[in-house]
Amino acid sequence: MTTARRDFPQLDAMRAAASIAVVVTHVGFWSGFYTSGFLGVVVQRLEAGVAVFFVLSGFLLCRPYLVAAHDRAPHDPARVYFQKRFFRIVPVYVVTVVAAMTLLAENRSMGVSRWVQNLLMVDLYRETQLPQGLTQMWSLTIEVAFYLILPLLGAVLVKVVCRDRWRPVRLLVFVAALIVLSVAWVAATHVMDASWAPWAAKWLPSYLSWFALGIGLAVLTVDSGAPGRLTSWLSTLGQDRVACWTSAAAILVFVSTPLGGSPLLIAPTPSQAIMRHVCYAAIALLLIAPCVLGTDDSPVARAMSLPAVRHLGHISYALFCCHVIVLAIAVPRLGFTVFDSNPVVLFVVIMGISLAVSELLYRFVEVPGMALRPRLQPTPAATAPSEAAAQS
Image (cartoon, rainbow, N blue to C red; front, side, top):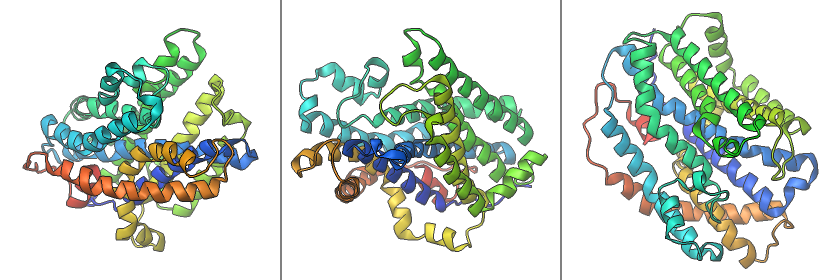
């Protein structure tokens, strides 16, 4: 049985929440709040917002391939897909890189090679530290790596795993294999005493399990009647928002204990790295599952679907891109002290300025940038307007 549902309005709110969580954890670092006891550690662990982004990408971008496999219908060709991704991501990113490299004094001495590396999103793989104002872009680099392999991954899902038929159990087994391989990669890069290990820890395989969880959720939304006790249990759990979100909060508290390692810039042990990886994955899954497996008629779902809330999701990419530059400029100029400031006041100031900048970037860079992409004829497997907007 296929689900007719193609619209997931609550995901815009989840995208906004993930972006705000990233801002909170960076403000916590700049204010020195990480060392303020257990609550400071919890603030640092809000970096789990990155896992939310990755699960969302796995869900939204792989779902059209799964719908095509289920319906035995064509999906958008790779050319169309890459055009959508390029015009969605690149304009705001280029403006952000230019702003960081020209406005921040720490970056002005960097040569042409660093400019090129950052514009091409390869600086993460060549340098030990990203430029000031762009340190958050490590996760966008991972996202783009996933974007690049997605057409191949989609072909594997449809042609190899499903063999042009709908085989949900095989898909879920494939998802489980990706998760196991990703966790093994994380373990290996933290266990091995090799010069290449720190670099390999930055590669896509270290985070592929988070994308894979999104694919697994997509399988359940395409075919809610997928056989098996596990899929039935997951579908039932996903409809219980209170249980899911309470469990996510409990896992956040758990990973904030010493088992998850230090909140400071100290390399975690292999067990701590695996603990964070798995816990962040579980948090993201539990937060997103009710938004795609549950109904849209609960008070929380209706609140998350309000136009104003969804708009925060629309500008969340711009917020993610600009807020570290805002921090680097505003902290010294507005009288704050690095590592010794009131975190609440700093958050309110940085969030207010960043939201204003994000709105400008969204209206005058992101939207015009997306309008530049060629007018494309949707295939029969194209998603509904609201889901397409969430992907674009």
